[in-house]
Length: 236
Image (cartoon, rainbow, N blue to C red; front, top):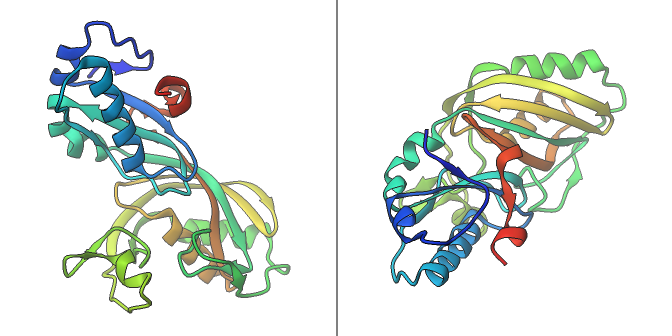
């Protein structure tokens, strides 16, 4: 497999950047995936003197999420589709009894139902129903293209659009902490699965609503967050 760079020595790096490098980044909260790509592109240009450098990321991570983002350079950008096709693993927190228009904290939470009567068995049964091959309707607040525009562009203008359901696979859905209204989870899933949509569907199954309050991606295929580095410490 391609060499992973977690120690960024730029001595004589020009050829390796052109041929292709894989950078594993722990994306900070509120950063977009493109923010990370642009930062690395700028730094590589500055350190190598190259005027043009191909840089891309393998799998978008929402600004409100943290965790593993794979960034590649040079000829390896041709392998982005292959890299981002790997199984994803996430940890995070759902909040029951409230929901938001975006199913996360991009929008303000509002009351959606009572949760105090729910038992651990209720929660685990709901998680089981969302495990395996399922049909999932992506959130309107997403980057999916509808008639040439991103769905979130319509959503932010309060325009209604039909989001077609698609088949995804949730291979594991483990509840790791239950302290209502908060429920921590670990999910492994196929490419294209929206964890925010799982929050919505989890809340609907329970009859009380839910939203995603925290999300961290810890693995993409064989690439693990433990091998990633923070932006501030490497690309000042």
